[in-house]
Image (cartoon, rainbow, N blue to C red; front, top):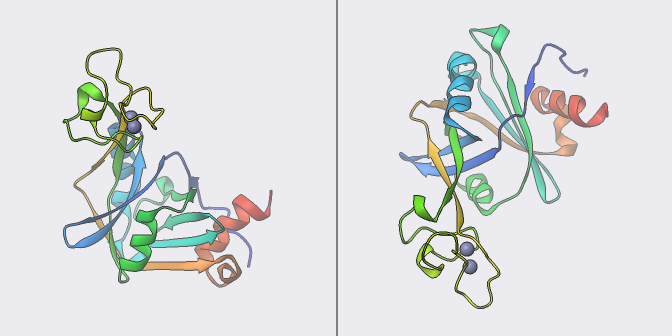
Length: 193
Ligand SMILES: [Zn+2]
Ligand SMILES: [Zn+2]
């Protein structure tokens, strides 16, 4: 099997969030700002036929490849997503809980500081805002064994528009030769390098 040169691969997104939301698991490619997410939806995802959307997960040690593509009614702007990501508890939860389908939504992943969040917001150091120094300029964590110097957190926002995905597969690298989408991705990004 050879790779398909017509596929445009896209990896200018930050990562993927997995959220249980509106009765179904959501797979959420994350963008650094709203405009980029909206553009990607408008130019690409909007034109995808729901039943043709495929997501492949290929585990390689502590990381996994996220690969997603679909047939488009606007083929000239069609793009397939791929990204190598660290395995996470949310990823494992999705793997166990998806039951064969998911909503695809786009999201934004933005950095927030102390002034932007409520008192019970969690810092990246795992302690909440109230456990950090008060006032502007100094907001180190007050836990003795924590070396966090500045409150910082990430917030994920989901865009409303969604598509339903029913073709989801978890594969090992040995199995990708039988899967056109995963094979194309690996042959372009791994085997020809
Ligand atoms: Zn902190
Ligand atoms: Zn802390």
